[in-house]
Image (cartoon, rainbow, N blue to C red; front, top):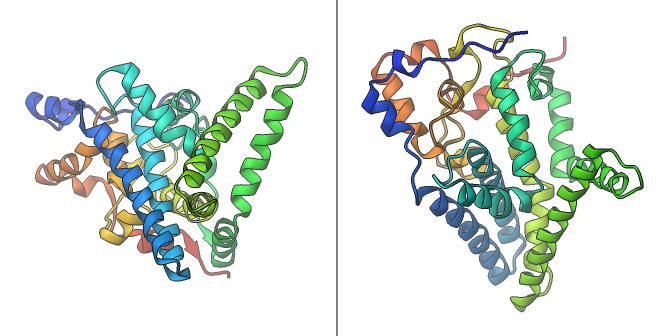
Length: 313
């Protein structure tokens, strides 16, 4: 199918407004990366200091949310929004955000731009994330349990490891070689974090809080974010305002499933030249121009989950 119809910024924003919205800051992206890691390290330090299971659970929730935040910032780097200098942008997106959570910036960039080009069409590589919905309540519960028990993590990392092993075999396919390199980078990042954990004087515990979060809450928060963005939106529509959903998010949702303004997903698809730190402003301006009525806007993540979950007949 042809590429989806894109929104024209000049139909919505004045030239000066658009220039301000698309301006890539020299410091905001770096500050957000520092913020994400600072929250992660603070949550780990607090849990270790308290040495109580309730503190560990709270830390795993907070860390999982910031791990999703790292993935979101890597996504912004894929669009070139972390820094105006490409080399710095790619360093932030690859080594400080993407690799620690198991993603390669360069591979993701190609994949993700295809998603934007063919949103909710058969060629969309992300269509499989939204096409199954709505699902039954029992199906949703099974998905949540697989995430929180680490089964989703083990399945994904196991498949990645097998492809990595194929990548080092003689005559390996180029795709397997690339995935193998990505997996080795992920393992190297884990080794660095494990080394820092022992250097803290608390043994493996700080790293286990990181890994436990990556294997559980991160997987769940990532799933909910993916569901909210496109599940039960129109497929194959020519209206660019119908391709994605924006979800209102309070402080709790921002801590877990909606870090760094990722909930403004309709705005992102309409105008992917806008950095994440300007999406809230874009949302406000669209409201002032009476365009919210054309968009898919959910009152919250709980409402989205109710929408995409049906009772068995």
